[in-house]
Image (cartoon, rainbow, N blue to C red):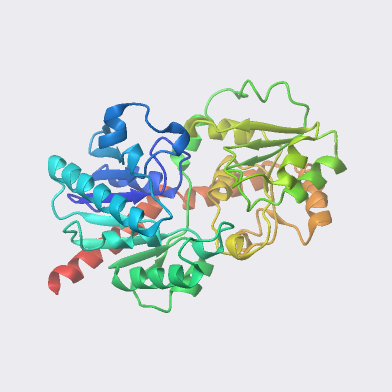
Length: 389
């Protein structure tokens, strides 16, 4: 495993937010390295909770070797170019000061978004990692700089990064032509954590207990990539089912299809849950769903929740996106909307333990411990190459 390094990770969200692959990776790297997890200012609705945080940001030690820093609330990114340039330089000065105080000398700089590329060369880093988890250009909200300029800055970051990680094979096909420093490392699951959470007598979360069975569930962020019309079809076709959505609503503006869905009597939104309680919520579901709109965004994803569903062993029904096809033996892939409903009906008839154990065995092979070992080996090799130069 990688050891003895200082790692500065620039993340799109806070450590306390919805956990994604960067949280899992940095937690494990912090076992043998020092990690600074840096996030942007809090959303505007949380701004100015204190004068100190508003002006200086918030630095915390969350455990041995792991620190988090949130930029000041007053230094929000701006769509006005000159304002954004000024706030970026101010954030950079504060970050340099935090790095100096913590003695994070010669860090590995770990970036998760193309717009963070302007940090390269500004922190005296020894290595630059760029971790691509989405086809960002396919997001539903257009980038202020325009798609052409956005694509150009991502290509520039891929070219200057020492190591590039991509989370799906489709991303590898799109980004892999730039150089041999690009590596496909799929997402994974905290398998040990799931096993520990599910030990002992079955426990059902209190807000699940009163819901009518069967429970058809989705666990994850509620964004535009979900097919709300598909979910509404499921709920309307079987009003006796409980369709449960577990996760934060992160939509950009009003979404009519989502509003229509949430009005249905057998649809239940339970909100965001602590990461340690997710295994219990997933186990409470009779069938777990991957109900995406099929577009450029979802064709490039590698859903974290897929691995979490596998770790519990529940039946899974998905739309036909590339990431799920390599698991076709242990989940059901629907051909269209009507077939999606039919596949859920079939999944409800599964009662054997063999398939559940097979799914869990596959999840064990796709643990974050294994992934971080792979990532560590790649980085160590890159460090050796860099030192040789």
